Image (cartoon, rainbow, N blue to C red; front, side, top):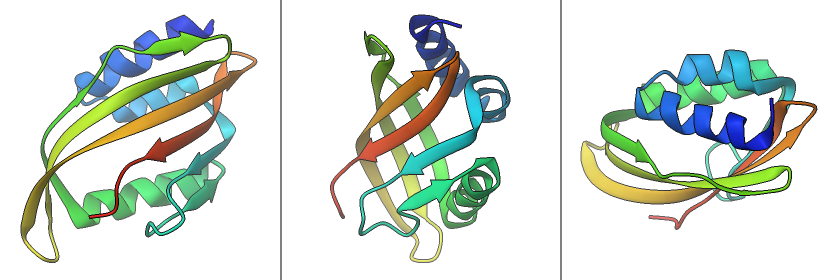
Length: 120
């Protein structure tokens, strides 16, 4: 798949809540996922580690709503904006947040994702 097609699929499937399909069809098994260094899970390498990161997210956050913007594509890179309304389960604190996801594509698969957002 071309970068634009991968980006469009990621946006469409995330907006439908079909995150599993994204990981199965769009991601390389050797994916690297990067969060800010102060985050709970700042770096995950490989599909197993990324799956554990996702499990941590689901255990700690209830997502009330989430939308993903249209992608901006440049060669083998694309970015999207995530808008989320979540509740942090351990504290009960509800908040809205935005983050930018930047993705790198090689050989028709996402090989790296990096997220940028402010610390709450």
